[in-house]
Image (cartoon, rainbow over all chains, first blue to last red; front, side, top):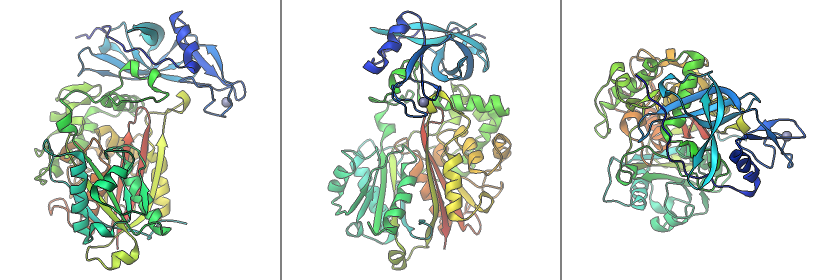
Length: 132
Length: 387
Ligand SMILES: [Zn+2]
């Protein structure tokens, strides 16, 4: 038995001035993170203020785009089943996402994944992850 | 400064309805307020403090205060989702202890069963800063708890059968509650064979969807002395908002790991002293993780702790949710905190159903989890004593 992942319609994320760079990079296939120049911590989702030391000049850094599945839940009671998940990036931050382009029944915690950007309706693409 | 011994729960009321297509939410709020005041032996004019959360229609508590004709000198609309009502009782005790009010009314009501035509509940995040980074991935209530359950299973080898025992225990209690939405006793097999909603949570791992509500009256020692009800004293409380911490989090831990110790320290008791526990049960996993975090067992051993009927009154070591809980009885307005307080008070008064009443129940705990384990939530713990 297999449940192949299917593309579903994704509503466009609301782009705000402080996250515009993130979505512009997404269009180029690049995943950006925010890093604090003061305490050196990375965080996600991106904010102008560091949620750890509250410094207000966080900087964009490029993520490698690879990581491992921290946890997931295949939502089966839905028009199109999908894998809601968290991925821990190589850089050490964990982000909410979907696992795509695979058999949903074969997804495992700890599996290595890489970012793939999926289109939204009239908006920038969003970062999802596919098994390596 | 502590709220220990400074306030009492004088009145409680759980609306008997589970489906209310012909009533407004405001009307349900008024009905539960009347019920709790009658239970306490007080009237509307005695109320000088009012507490409500996001389920109350209108801006803050003003519309409801006007609708019910309350004359107030204190109002608190702290919103922590389904745990708000436990926070309200704690805040009411603080307000009473500092002289800001003397009779506090807390109400909850809603009609999700009448208003929602099936389907999974997707929370409207509004203009929250996290929304653009979450909504594209289709979070719904079931998968935002499913991710915590999956990680707990991975880290601690917790099984679906162990989770099922939580529902089995709730169903054993619900069979004696004529108002419960689900009154049939179920087995572990029934739970694990029910349809998968969002891995690893089956249909029977989820709470019910019900209309209705409830209310609580909190008073100070002087007012309590004038009333006839058994004296349920507030001993300690704790609250903790847990979130994703910039992407550095552990989804197997809930805010109970902080709200619990705060409440136990204030009350001066420990988990093994508790005779009865009302544990928020939006899903089976919510109970399992909460019991660990409150210290009823070690972290990671929740699966073993809940198995084999250990939560069934008269059989297990820790009787829980003897009204059938949110899993079987009632989850009004998709918020289970109010009914958690009410059943704990019934137990302390000796007013629970005789088949589930805990013997010599003099110390009880109620715990709420509002929001979701897999993203952000507000935990609230309340410890009460029969004086
Ligand atoms: Zn910093």
